[in-house]
Length: 318
Image 1: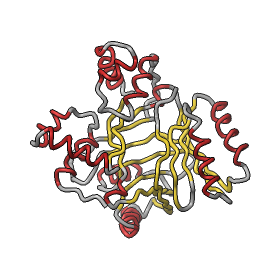
Image 2 (image 1 turned 30 degrees about the vertical axis):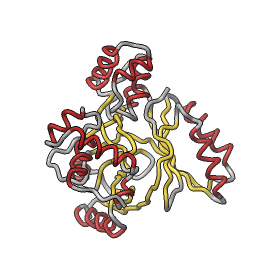
Image 3 (image 1 turned 120 degrees about the horizontal axis):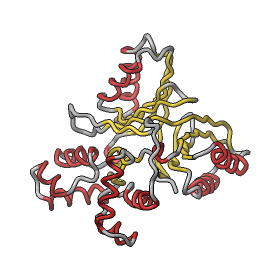
C-alpha cells in the first residue's frame, strides 16, 4: 500500500479541484519547488495511484442522452469475461464507461446516444451476442450527475461539477470534438502538442478550450485515481425513498460528506445513487447508518455494491 505524506495529499487535493493547474501555479500555491511537485506527481503516476487527469464533459450539451446498464452474468469463466470486455470496448463511439462490479451486479455500462434507435442497436448487439450469459440487467437514464472535489484534506470550499442538467444544446465544431478527445483524459498535455497533432495553430487550441469552458461543455476538472493503492475501496449506495421532500437536504449532506464524491439522480434505478470511497466495510456501514438515522423519515431502504476496475472511460463521443 502506498504511504502518502502531507505534501502528497495537498498535491492530490489541488489537482482534484483543477487537474489542469499549471505546475508553476501549483508550486506557488503549495510553497514548494516545481521540481519537488513534479517528482511527487510522477511517483504517484508510476505507483498507479494517479491514473488520469480529466476534464469533466457535459455530453448532454452535445446532444447525447446517457443511459446506464447494470448486468449480472451466469456461467461466466475468465475466457468469457475477456471476450465480453473486448466486445464492449469495440463500441468506441457509444460506450463511455465499462466498469467491473462486485456483488449484485458484474458490470456497469454507460452509453451515450442521440436516439432510441441507437440505444436499441447497442443493446440488441450485446443481447444477441451474450443472451445465454446474461442472467439479469437493469436499465436507467443516467442524468444528472454531480461530482464533488474532496480528497484527504478537509476543505470548506466544495466544487460541484454538474453534467446532464442543462437542456440547451451547443453546436460543437469538429475541432471542438477533436480537441476534447485528446484533452479530456489528459488535461496536462501541452496545448502545443494538441496543436501539432491536429495541425492547427496554438492559438486555435487555447481559444477553443476557453470557449468550451465558458460554454460549460468542459464543466470542471478532476483526477482519475485508483484509491485501492492507498487502502480505500469504491462503493455505490442505491437509496430508495418514500418521498422526495428532503432531497435538497440529502444533496447538501452528500456534498459536504468527506467520503462521498458523486451523486446521480436517475430514472429507472434507485431514487438517488451515491459513490464514495471508504477504508473498510465497517466504514461503509457506519455511513449508511448515519444516512438512515438522519433521514429516517424519507429513506425506505438502501443497497450497496463495490466496483474494482474501470476498463474503459471516455466521455467524448464521435
